[in-house]
Every structure is written in C-alpha cells, then in structure tokens.
Length: 136
Image (tube, rainbow, N blue to C red):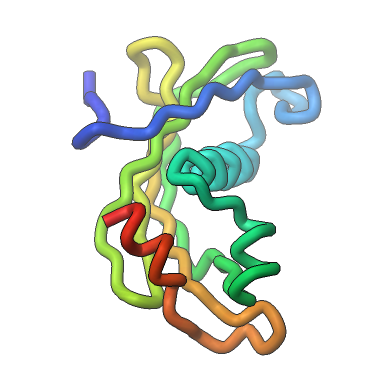
C-alpha cells in the first residue's frame, strides 16, 4: 500500500450519482474535478480565496498540464479523501502531487501543473507575494 508523500492537505469528497458513469464507477474525468476542489480548499486553508485573489490582484490560476494514473474504482456514495502536496514552484508556476484515497486504498494519483496568469490578458504573471509567503 502506498502512503501519501510528505504531510498532505486532505479534503473529503462524497461520490454522487452525477459523478458516476454507466458502469456505476466514478467517471475518469471527474477525478480532475475532485483534485481541483481540493486545491481550492488547500489555498483557502492558507487564508486565500481564488475570487479575492482575482479581485484584489488580477491573478488567476490555470491548469497547464495533467498526468493521472487510475488504480481502483470509486463508486456511488463512497467517501474519499483527496490529498494535495505542493511540489516544485516558481514565481509563476506550481506543480501539485495529488491522490484520491478510500480508506487505506489509493484510487488515483496525478501531477497537476498550474500557472498564474492575469485575469484580463491570460499572460503569465507572478504569483502574488502574500500567497507565495503563505505556501513556502
């Protein structure tokens, strides 16, 4: 059994009917939604909301790349935990290691690249200083 690397932020997710496919398991793309929600709550745990960052600084985050591996299916009504670990980061980019767990079973894992851009132009910009200080 693989354990999450480093101390990970954990966010609980319940699997709803809308998350499943015709086979009764979580549709593969929905893990990206679960991972997105967990990163948003990870950010909030440092006192930052994405909307406030956008309003106050013009900064938004966009996903630039993903790599996922699916190991076991999650099913309707499962309670899963999604973990977030910040890996490499620069002044404009962050890379996250994320996993979905059901109890002690690893269901899916991936690496998500995120860039900071200006909300109006989508041109790269520095991650706001206060945020960088919080997460470093």
